[in-house]
Amino acid sequence: MGASIFVKFLEVEGKRISLQIWDFGGEEQFRFLLPSYAIGSSGGIYMFDLTRFATLGAIDQWLGFFREATQNEDIPIIMVGGKSDLVEKRSISRKDAIQLTKQHNFYDYVECSSKSGDNVDKIIDYLSREMMKNVGLI
Image 1 (tube, rainbow, N blue to C red):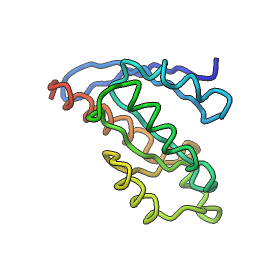
Image 2: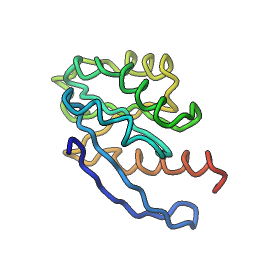
Image 3: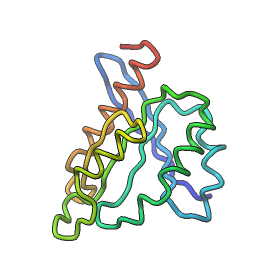
Image 4: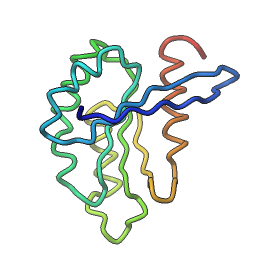
């Protein structure tokens, strides 16, 4: 199908919410699916690999697909650098990532490690709050 789907339940400021998280993995052969799956999205995460500069190559295409499908420039989208635990293999500096975040009008930039769990919950919490603010729930 080209996407993995996860559901996460959490509580934000006393409100119980559920998130549907669609992971497109970045494979070129499945990129054409993104616009149809992004319809109805309330937020987005552009995740790239801090150890592989090439993973930033699709940023403009991904944003174009996502923003066209959602028809809403105000949807909170954050940029996430993954594999922050691999410090010695890093090929993208924090400074460069922050510059790209500003250049593409992302809400924020966060680095995380799926391996250690560092900042994973922070990303979900932050994006959930921004989505709720965006629709007036908090």
